[in-house]
Image 1: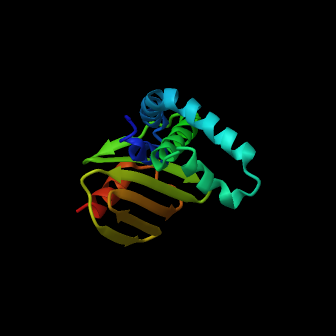
Image 2 (image 1 turned 120 degrees about the vertical axis):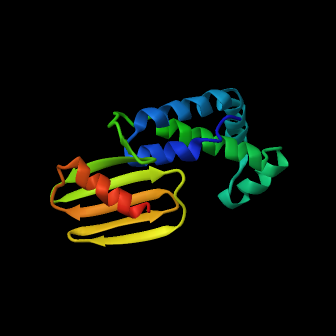
Image 3 (image 1 turned 120 degrees about the horizontal axis):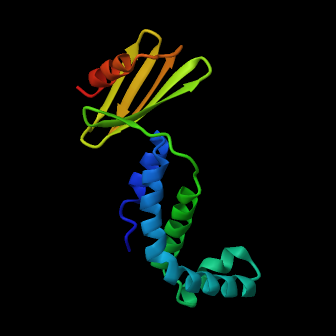
Length: 160
């Protein structure tokens, strides 16, 4: 099953890179497509014959639906939903960090991802904050930052 990178797809969506996420999810969908229809049919048959929902897990196991089948179904659904996110706001790269800047009314939001960054770091800045937690970067700044150099300076301070 080629769904090993599905967690990367969620990170790409989070920073606004939906094209990358779509490519990863398509790989996963293609690898699971054949087995999913059989699993769904089995589950529908079993569900139709079960009177009380709390008994469903027992009958699923009894009729041969394994945990692996349920995980495949969940991965397929997750990949399908990732694939539905439209649009692409291309992220920027700086010093090993992929990031995107969103302007939300009176706030500037920075979301990023650094593959090689580990640990936790919090930066309190004049008009907001930046947080790094095991590669994920999030920041909120009151007002708008139009200078790309100012954002790069904030990110470089955070990933030191």
